[in-house]
Figure 1 (cartoon, helix red, strand yellow):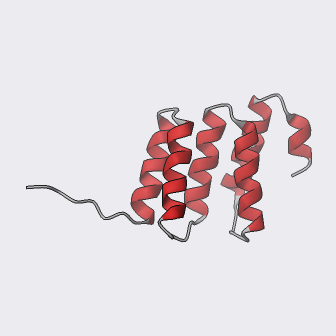
Figure 2 (cartoon, helix red, strand yellow):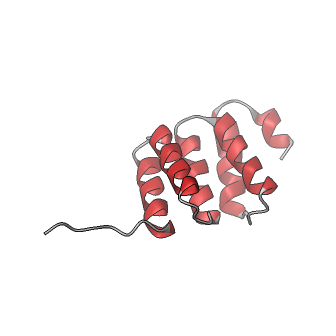
Figure 3 (cartoon, rainbow, N blue to C red):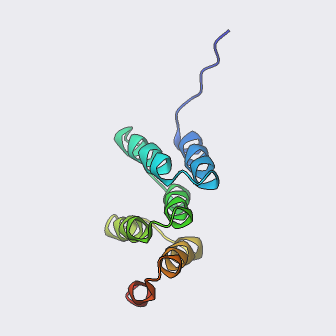
Length: 101
């Protein structure tokens, strides 16, 4: 018996969150790219998980880039999104970047 997993936004969100918790920011961004290419409509949970993965990985530039993409695509963002970006900037010693948000 082979079990097949339905690839939907929930499975992509879970995969990105798992990457974040494992400190695998590059893998998280890869999963995000696959989800995007699958023509799924990303949501705030997807983006927050990816931003948080970048924050954990010390990639403040990527976190800012993802947050900016959320705004450009008019995706709803929330306090989790904002705090993850702020934390990424703080951990990267880039507090000046945080002032521009």
